[in-house]
Image 1 (cartoon, rainbow, N blue to C red):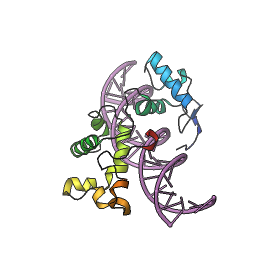
Image 2 (cartoon, rainbow, N blue to C red):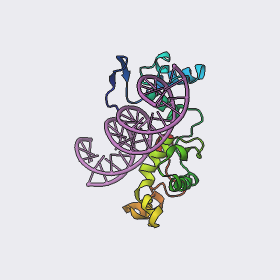
Image 3 (cartoon, rainbow, N blue to C red):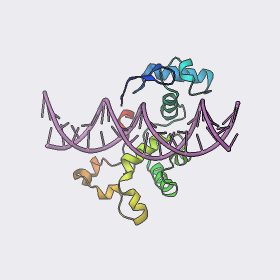
Image 4 (cartoon, rainbow, N blue to C red):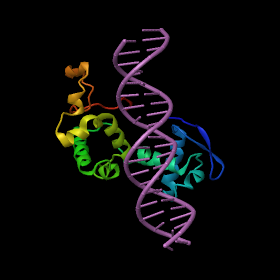
Length: 161
DNA sequence: AATCTCCACAACCGCGCGCAT
DNA sequence: CATGCGCGCGGTTGTGGAGAT
């Protein structure tokens, strides 16, 4: 994740931090936005005392810090909706997310790429089995240890347990 | 216990669009 | 009309953790 933890911002020659956000940085961003709102992502980081690009701040806020976001626990209902919307809209994550309250495009995109992508594209066209049906892992027969999110009540990211 | 492999996901990058000048 | 800026979107990468060997 941390590709180049401290890199020079070529536009203004200041050092910008990359990689995972610390709790302190999160707090700075939240506090600043609560107090002053979002006025300009490009110039805000400096005003907020953050050595980050505006882009990085925006992403962090939009995908993780916004108070109206629900993390993890994608329900079967949501998953069905994602499938249907993806069938209709394709990879238009922003459009899909607009109909899923409390979710972010990044989250849905990640979820799709990791849990639903395999086999689904073809399934939509050809009605062939899902990833679940195709990729039967050894323990898939054991419903008690079913690792697949396609099962109702599916997996919950461990960090939220 | 140590090492390897795979998976999930946070974060980065490049591109395109809309708006102001 | 051309240009520059700011923002949002979609694709991709890299890390950490869990499970397998």
